[in-house]
Length: 320
Ligand SMILES: [Fe+2]
Image: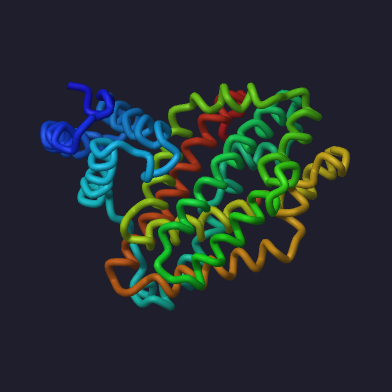
């Protein structure tokens, strides 16, 4: 029985039966998958969830059975996700926010061998091209992240801020100014195209990260998504702030660097980071939410690290 692929059910009774038959095997698969996070079970769980997450752009279009199984999978993951250590001073809400802000610089992509190589060494044109293609891949899923986040926030004040971030990301309605579009001149300047990004889209670690972001942004507890956006916004600001002077030093023409200037040299970035921090503080209600936010932030860091390690392999960059 394929847990993730089935004909679209025509009636609720049919959907309910599909879910009932799959619920237990899915729970067992999730439990086995998280036990080693590398074997065949991990692979089939991740590829199955990727199928759910990509089959429909949002839960409002899902069939009942896919919706039921996807949300059950999130519950099963909640039970088996490994916890992460927290220092005692991070046990209060303010203590946790201070801890998370201090932790961030140590778990962003800037610490990866890939970024260290790009910043400190002399990458070839092909290596820059692969980096540009991977950035476009990350950029073009980010609108979806923000759209899902905005639908999942209970408080209007923060939902409005998520719309603002979504508007910024989408070029305020101008596709030419959408953040992902602004990566294209950089990619094309290097002789690359969207096809390079599509090839990178096949990387398994990228699918795992995509699943994770979808899960966090659609989870019934918004703390998952709020902690994830806190990580993503800060992470992007740190990476692109460091990359802008590097690319200028490599003499890339200024007109292909607009993506980097709007992220690495713009007061809006600081506003995003501060707002994300405040949003995190106000969504955490107690010790359970602190645990969740810690897992969400740390796991996002780990999954980026795995993806960047894989991209570094493709670029034939060896760890220092
Ligand atoms: Fe952006």
